[in-house]
Length: 479
Image 1 (cartoon, rainbow, N blue to C red):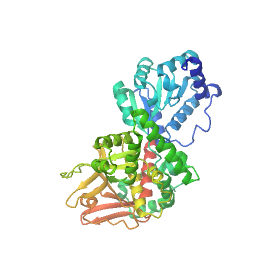
Image 2 (tube, one colour):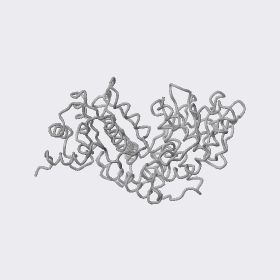
Image 3 (cartoon, rainbow, N blue to C red):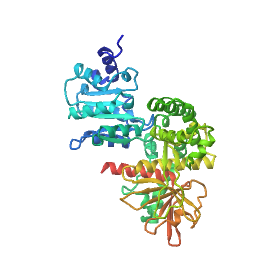
C-alpha cells in the first residue's frame, strides 16, 4: 500500500486547513494577545519591495505556531481567499515521508490554481530537503509568501546559508518577556511616560523617577510568580503551578532532549545530553569549564560535552554568554557562562516547586531572566552580549552589551534584600560619569543614582527594569 498518495495527502490538508470550508480560523487557535515577534513577522511577510520568507525559531511552546495562526487570521480578515492559505505541520508522520514539492503539487492540482498563495510550514526541519524545495518555490513563484517555524536555530541557519541568505529573515521567538507576561495576565500598570528609557532614568528629575518606580512597584508579586512558572504562554495562564512544572519538564524539556535533538542530529546516546543539561541546570548563570564537566560526568569526553552544549543552544534550551572585552587588556582565559533559556525550565528539571524563600535560587533565576530579556531586546543591534571578568580582583560584570550604535551597557544583577556595591567592584570602576552602569536590585524602593567619587551607577528594581524593556519595545513598534 502506498501511504503517500493524493487522497491521503488531501485528507490531511483539509484537516490542517479548516478555513477552506468555514472561511474563518478556529477561535482556540487565534489567541488575542499578539507578541512582538508577530509584528516583526508580519512586517517581513507583507513587504513587497524586499521579498523575504520568514523563519520563526525558538524552543517548544513559546508560541511560534500561534503567531502563524494569528497571521492566517489577519490574512482572512483582509479577504485573502481561504484556499490560498496553506498550513502544514511537518511533524506529522505522513509528511515526513513526503517532499514539500509533492505536497504543493497536490495542493495546486486540487485546491487552488492561483499563484498568490501563502504557505505556513510548522516544524520545517522535519521536511525532507526543505531548504532546497523552499528555494525552488521562492525562485519559481514570485507571488508566493512563506512563513515557517523550527526549533533548532543553527540547523536552520546552516540550511538557509546553503539556499541563499538573501531569501530569508530569521526571527527568534523567546519565551514571554515579563511585559508580555503581564499583558497576557491583564496586569495593568498606571500610565508611564511614552519616552521612557530604562538606561537613561538618571536624566529625569528625582520626583519623576519616584513617580515612575512607585507605579511599577505593584509588579513585585507578579514578578516572583513569573520567575517560578516562566514565560511559556500556556503555562503562565494555568492556575496549577506544580502541574505546569510537570508539563514543562515532560512536554518541553524531555521532548527536546529525547526526540527533537536525536532526530535532528542523529544522537544515539540520549543519556549523555540529559546529564549535561542537568549539570547546566545546577550551574546556570555560572562560568563553565568543559574539562570539569567531562570529569564530573564520568566518561563523557570533552569533545562530546562541547558538541552537546552546542546542540542544547541550537534547541533554544540554553544561552551561551561569552567573555567580552570592555576596553581593558584581557588576561584571563576565555570561558563561557551558561544560562538556561527560561528560568522555569531550571525550576522544573530540578523540581524546585517553591523558590520564594531561597535567596540563592532567586538570585540565580533573576539573573537568568535579566540576561534573557537583554538578549531578546538587543539581538538586532548588539554586536556582542556577554560578561566581563578582569581587573586586579578579577571582578565580574554579569552582562555587557556591545554595539556600534551606543557605548557599552554594563549590568550587574544583585537580586538581594541588601544589594551591596563597593567602589572596588568592576561595575563601578568601569562606569563613566555620563553613562552610569546599571545594578538590578530586588526591593521596590531600591532605585536611583549612587556616586562613588567621580563614578556613578544607577539602581533599578528587577521587575521595573524588565517591564520597562517591554514597554519601550511596544512604543518602538507603535512609531
